[in-house]
Amino acid sequence: MRIAPVSLSVFVECCRSAVGSLAAHRLRSFLTTLGVVIGVASIVAVVALLGGLQTAIASQFAGLGGTSLAISALTPVEDALQGRRVRLTDEDLELVQTRVDGVSNVTPLVVIHDEIHYGAHSTVSQIRGTTQSYQDVYNRFPAKGRFLSPADDRQRRRVCVIGERTGESLGMGEDPIGQFIGLAGEWCRVVGVMERGGELLGASSDHHVLLPYQTMRSMAGPHDPPDLFIHLTVADPSRRRATAERIRTLLRRAHDLDPEDQDDFRVQTAEEVAEAFDAVAGTITAFVAGMVGISLLVAGVGVMNVMLVSVTERTREIGICKALGATRHQVLLQFLIEAMTLSVLGGVIGLFVGGGIAAFVASLIPDFPAPVPPLSAAVLALVFSALVGIVFGVLPAMRAARLDPIEALRHD
Amino acid sequence: MPLIRLQGVSKRYDVGGNTVAALDNVDLSVARGQRVAIVGSSGSGKSTLLGLIGCLDTPTSGEYVLNGRDVSVQDGRRLARIRNAEIGFVFQSFHLLPRLTALGNVMQPLVYGGVSMRERRRLALAALSRVGLHDRANHLPSQLSGGQRQRVAMARAFVTRPSIVLADEPTGNLDSTATAQVMDLLDTMHGDGQTILIVTHEADIASRCERTVELADGRVVRDEGT
Image 1 (cartoon, helix red, strand yellow):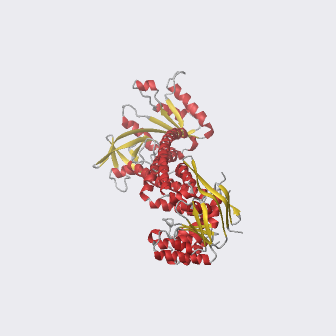
Image 2 (tube, rainbow over the protein chains, first blue to last red):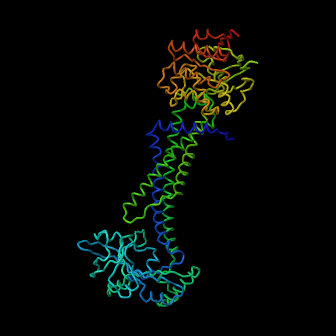
């Protein structure tokens, strides 16, 4: 079948007429398009929320570039089942600091959660023991005051840097610097306030206390040592793999592992951590996309149903248009545009509703990064809803186009 | 050469295995500018004839030449174009598009003819002026009286300057005042040289036409005033 050229004015008139006939049945049009709205809204919401997480993770690693490595303990499954947990130790830290060439910013990080107080206020906060190079590794710097210095660490000073929100929740006022907060039975002087930031992995952003690593070690006492993470920067990015291998050899020897034993630690690059998250996000997105595919299918059947009703209702109108000289193509076009308008309208509404849902959910969860509505998902949602309109609009439109003009004119 | 020439035209339908001839071997020629009344009882084949002349349908057999073109062998798309360019319809029950204003209705055939927006507006307003409804241009059909609706339909029929206007019982749903207005309009159009075919069963309308063709059982049984 040859597609007849359709002039622009016919196209414009078709669009106008499509909008007019949809507006004539507002409630019906709205209910029909609801399925598309729900489908598109759900995919946009999920993708926007995941996009926010991914952006937050990416920004967390942005300062690290391709040159950073993270070492963490990895308890083999059999040991975990027996209740044993492997920890990295200070000896491991020292090994990495002293026996690996071409690395800098070797930064220990221990994390515990404990109650902190100031005056009559108290709150539970994450407490991190670390050293000066934390700033470079995490790309976060103090907004007020100073960061922890090597001297603080060496002399195990009772000083701390707090997150902005920590100061607020303790009611410390505008300038917490120089004040003392109590934690684990000790008083620590606040020397700095961190800038706002959206850290994510293992952290409520802006709500934490940073202590010198050694101070934290001494305060922890003889208890079970908290989990130790080691971050470091490789000077030459091309030697990253070799450096990771060197660390692996050192730690395996230090941990007395036999050749057949698996590593009880993990040396990861920042990208690997981010990739692991991306993989999870990808799976979730694919799953949601599948669900949305089904819901759009159902929505499409709804569109088709209403368009069939509409064609029947307007049989005589179609007959009139044909008598006035409308070709099959022009009638087909008009009904296709109507179906498409219906579903694309749903897509557009769904886009905004989905964005709203994402923003709402993000605001419910504390410290959740702002959702990033991805342009690609928006475009995809619109293309998909248009496609639903075309696919499910073809049958009713063909039926309209094929009507016999004389029969159609006689129709009541 | 006549504007319309039907030669041996038949239209047969299959009804439950039996073939019924709605039109049986009809010969009819209409010269340009003529006004012809087509009369006959219901079921005589008037509507079928009008459908064929109006290119809404094609004959089962026979030849139909309209304006020098054999239209009995055209495909659907060409027939639509011919309807748009050559034919103006006036129906008994007006058949206006309910969601379009009077102006929109008159512009509609021009849309299918690919006339530009500005030109459509100009032509349609001129046509509405001719039927005396210039001031009702933005009214919807539901806001117009029956006579006004039929005049809008007439403006729509001749806005494209068609070769023929086909009127199917144009006054069948109108009161006497509106009937007089519609007939006067048809007189005016005829005076301007417009070829008009009117299907009617009202004697006084037929008497205003210089030629009357009577159908019975699908055949032409009387043709007066040729």
